[in-house]
Length: 117
Image 1 (cartoon, helix red, strand yellow):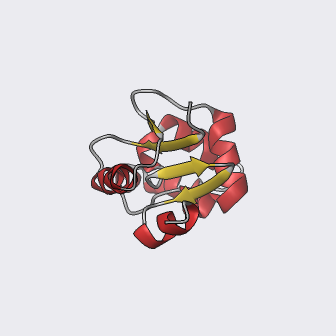
Image 2 (cartoon, rainbow, N blue to C red; image 1 turned 90 degrees about the horizontal axis):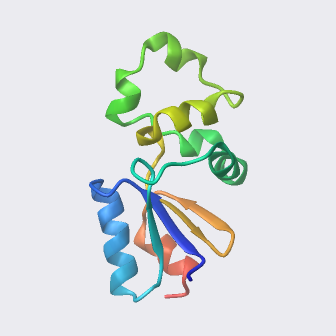
Image 3 (cartoon, rainbow, N blue to C red; image 1 turned 90 degrees about the vertical axis):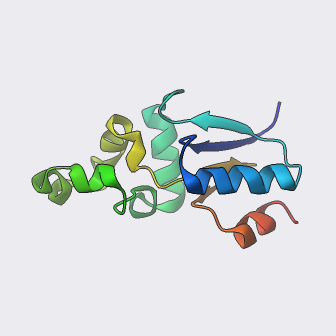
């Protein structure tokens, strides 16, 4: 069993790029689809604690833009995890968890540093 998990949505282009990079570099990982496989509050809380809620929340996506503006204005550190649990598509993707480290988004140079490649 690998201790590297890639969280995302299988049809997301950025997630596809990250998976391709991991495969090309022969890095063992488990893919966890946040929609199909689900999430729990403690998992989201751990990501927020590691990198900050502003980095975990994807405000560029369709799901965020479709939210009622009043709901958008009320998002804060106190309630963002619950919102992300309800709308997992608003999590910036992918989330890479390896050896206790959390990386949000995909950049080949950052992944190379994570895996000494």
